[in-house]
Image (cartoon, rainbow, N blue to C red; front, side, top):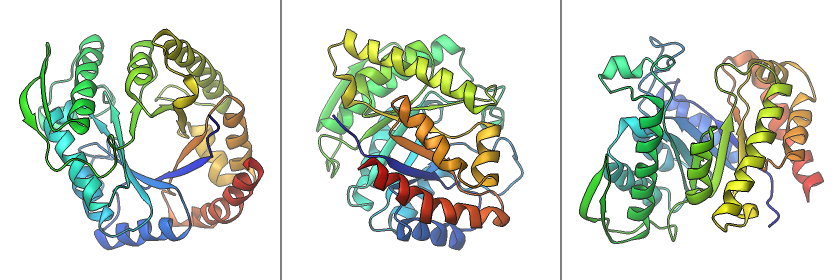
Length: 300
C-alpha cells in the first residue's frame, strides 16, 4: 500500500490564545496536513513559561479551523482511559472528523516535571508499558463500540457507553508513539500510525536514522507475527534531535535532505516543530512554500 507523504507541524501551546488561533489558521492556509499539540502539564524544559492545557486547547482550535487535521500525543499517565475516549469522541465531532488521536506511555519523571507538579505517580518502566497496553485496548474498544466492558490488572470499565459514536469510523485514526520492543508490539497490534522520536539522548541525524531503521524493521517483524500487512501501518518521525533542528532552521535545503533520508527507510509522515523564535519564520516559510511542494511533487 503506497502512502502519500504527510507533513505535520508540532505547533505547541506556548503562545497566547489569539496567537494560537492565528498560527493554526495560517498552517491550514499553507496546506499542511495537520498540526499537533503536546500533552504535558507544563513545558518541562521551561516550566515557568506560558503553557495551555492540551486537550482543552485542541477542542478550541478544532472549532477555529476547517480542513487541517488536528492532533495530540496524549500521555496515558494523565487520564482515565474512558474519559480520554470521550474527550477524543467529542473533539472528533467538534472538528467534523479531523482528529488524529495520538497515545503514548508518557516521558519518565526524570525528564518531565509534570509528575512532581501534579502528584501523578511515576510508574516504573515495566508497569508503565503494562498499563499502556491495557489503556490502548480500552480506548480502541470504546471508540469502536457503543458499550464496552473490560477487566484488566490496572484498569476496569463496566458497561461503559459512548454515545454518540465518533464521526470517523470505525474510530479516529490512532497514532502510537514509542520506541522499545514492547511499545512497538502494541503499535503493531493497534496503531494506524507509529511515531518515533530520538529521545533526550539521541543527538545526531545519523544516529536517529540508524535507530529508526532498526525500529522499523522490528515493527515489520511484529506485524508479521500477528498476521498484519506491515504496509497498512504508516511510519511517522518527529524531527527532534538537536542537530536536526539546527539544520532544519539553519541550513537552506536541509529539510529536503532530512525528509528524503527518512523516506528511504520507510517513513511517510514528517512531524517538525514550529519555530521557537520569530527570526526563524523565513526559513519555516521557505520549507512550507517551496520544500514541501517540491517533495510532494517528486513523490507522485
